[in-house]
Image 1: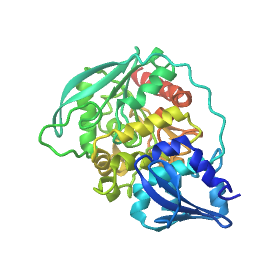
Image 2 (image 1 turned 135 degrees about the horizontal axis):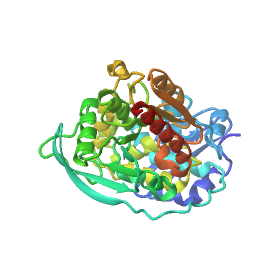
Image 3 (image 1 turned 30 degrees about the vertical axis):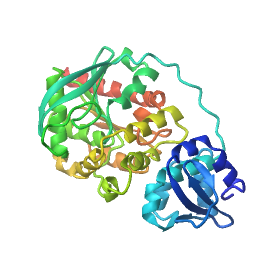
Image 4 (image 1 turned 90 degrees about the horizontal axis):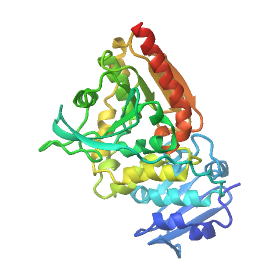
Length: 402
């Protein structure tokens, strides 16, 4: 199997690709061993091809895996395949990065249709929004907080560059608020939080920890549990290590001992639309079988972030090193439940497991159906892993108090 014979017809008839391609004009080639297709796109419509400005070439086996209706973990998106050479990029590389959203849309249009998952039964989005003033390491900011439910407190931190909306699906699609009070907050410069006046945004691991403690103090939270994915997954591990008496435990998702090599000048380049590139940088880290509505919400969240914030978060995230705090974690530290989605190509499960193995009081669980945004891409599936993880946190905290 290689690129479909009716590839151009599929591209021409795909409404989602047409939406992705509004305002764009590009010609590119997808080439396999036995077939290639050159597509011209102008303002959402297929046009006469002309000369391709870039091409993507791979073996038929690679195209078969990528274009499967249900790609295996690690084969779901073109970006990691280009990065590691399984797909060869030739021509104008800058044009490829500017039009990555169109390439991704074309790949999805060429996949066979898969059976859509039945919509979840939704609860009302009954979250209470408020602001708290936090005098953090970069100055004073009015931090936006959303809360829902009653019970033990769960302080939730979104991924790099994102905001509290990532946790809306947990509130509407799962019974979490029947058991816990979900409390999510936006870092300064993120979402609805204000910037700190007169300061350029940056974030180091130390400053992130101070922000977490500052928010918990401003809200008067006693000993909340922490939940964080990706950059926040590393942050909650650090918070437990540095402030073991302030928090009752943490669920760390998609984190590793370090994340060197994640930064790129593309993320702050003036000639590239960051509202296009940043979500494409992230969307391929999810399982394409996760509900389209939730994957689209993750994409939308990243398309609406302030320019430069995601890049600054990633620069700060790269300063994270587990070695810096490893000696602070002991068997008496609050429990850290490490969860890892199999579809995450940025932090594969084996790297999360390696970190968990170095934490004395920890557990590890694989989430085979999820990716880098488990809490947001498929909340109801994530709940099946999160609930037992939170139970482990509560059990260890209870035993430590006896």
